[in-house]
Length: 105
Figure 1 (cartoon, rainbow, N blue to C red):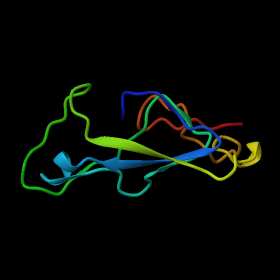
Figure 2: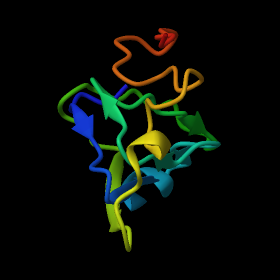
Figure 3: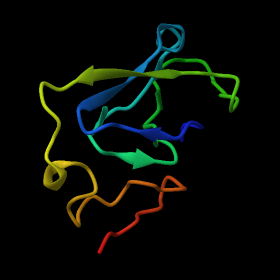
C-alpha cells in the first residue's frame, strides 16, 4: 500500500504508473487496475507489484518510491451518482489494509 492519502476530485482521473529505475530491474507496478476513479477517497492505494527480474528486491517504506500518479483532467465533472463510492459495489475506498473491503450500505 502507498503511504499517502489520496482523494481524486470529481473532475479528474488518476493513473498509477511504475518508475523507470524499478522497471529496469524487473519490478512492475499495478498489473490489472491502474486507474483511480473520480471521487475515490483512500487512506492509500493498494499496489499490485510483480517482480519479473532475477534480483530479490526489498522495498523500504517512506524511502523507496516505486510508483507515481499521473492526474488527467476530465472535460466535465462526473455527476455525484457516477463517482466512486456512489454504488454499493464500490468497496475499496478508505481501506486500511490490502484485504480490507468496506462494503457500503
